[in-house]
Image (cartoon, rainbow, N blue to C red):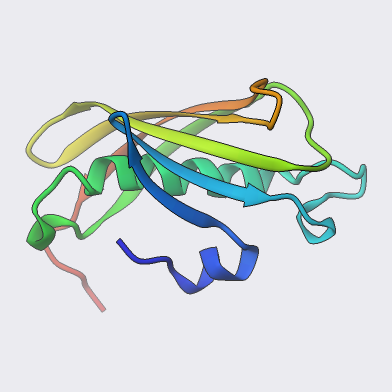
Length: 128
């Protein structure tokens, strides 16, 4: 799967599948930080959404990879201010139209920064 313009804009690197997990990386820059000097929660959500969605949609045949994130829940566990953040997404259960996914973000020291779960849904077609 290719990177979207939004992922390019924030500097998200799509590593790919590693040991049944989809891996994404982000080098923290000043633009990723909130007014407190820590990585913005929206950036962490983006990392997890990208990793979890690709873990699910990457498991499907290419012609069925049209879908959306139906819902996502995230817990912010440790603030980050610098270095590389690595997101891991894994498909834990799939049905004909949905996939349940989980993900984590770790910092360079291997500490857990955030944890999430979500549901991905296949679309029958795109409506304008």
